[in-house]
Length: 338
Image (cartoon, rainbow, N blue to C red):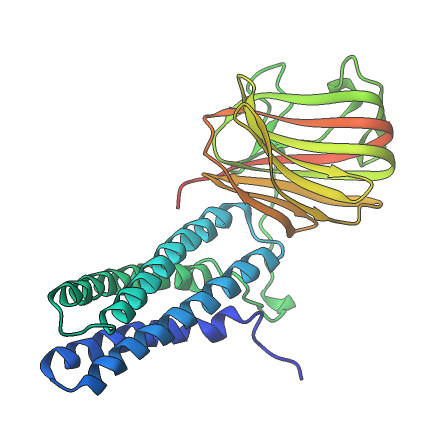
C-alpha cells in the first residue's frame, strides 16, 4: 500500500498534543473529587502522555535525519524544533513521574507536595508543548518540509539567473550569488597545487599526500556544499567549518566508506559515524547551526551530532590521500538564527 505519510512522526505527534491537555483536565477534576479512581485516572493519563511523547520524539529524530534535499536555511529551524521537543519530553516525563510517586501515599503531606509539583511541571509541559507544536507546524506550512508538490509544467516560471558578482577581495575565491557564496573552480585559483581544467566541470586536483583549499572569508553558522568527483581518488575528504585558533569542526568522508562528524575544542572528538558508499560524483555538505551539526551526502543526513557552538571562523576543503579529485563547485550558505 502506498502511504501518503512521509514517516511516522506526523501520525504520532497528535497523541501528546491531545493527552497532555487531557491529563491536565483530569488532574483538575481529581482536585475537585475525593474519588481515588479519578486520581488514578490522572496518573494513568500522564503515563500515556509520557509514552506517546517518547515515541513521538524518537520518530521525530528519525524523520529529521531521513529528510532529503532540505534547504540550508531550514536546518536551523529543524534544530530549534528539536530543542523545544527535547524540553517538552523532559517536562512530560517529569510530570508523569511525580504524579506516579504521589499515588504511592496520597494522604501524606509530602506526597501532596509532590503532587502539586507534578501539576506545576505539567502546566509547564503544556506551555512548552504549544511552542514545540507551533515550530513543527511552521516547518510544514511555512517551510514546506516533507511536502511533495505535484508537478505543474505550465506553472513554472524560472527566475533569470544573472552573472555572479565579482569577489570583494582580489585574493578571494568566492563570489556572492544571492545570499550565498560560490566558487566555480579554475586551475588558476589553485596556485601551488597540481590542478588542470575540466571542461565545464571545474578542476581536477591531483592529490598526493595532504592538500587544502582554504577560503579567506570568515563565517558564523553555515552550510558548506561541495560537488566532488571521487572516482579516481583514494583517501579522505574533509569539509571544515569554524576554523579559528586550532578549533572548529569537520565532516570527514573516507573512500573506504566511513563518514565521521568531528569537533575540535581543541581536543578532537568524534560526534557521530556511519558507513556510506562513496563512488563517483557526490554532493557533500556539512551544516553547522549553533550546536546542531550534520553531515550530508547527496542531500541525505548520514551523521548528526551536537557540540558547543564555535565563534566565527574560516572554511576549507582538505584532502588526504592519492589520486585525482574533481572539484565541480563549492557553495557556502550563511545561516540565520531561527
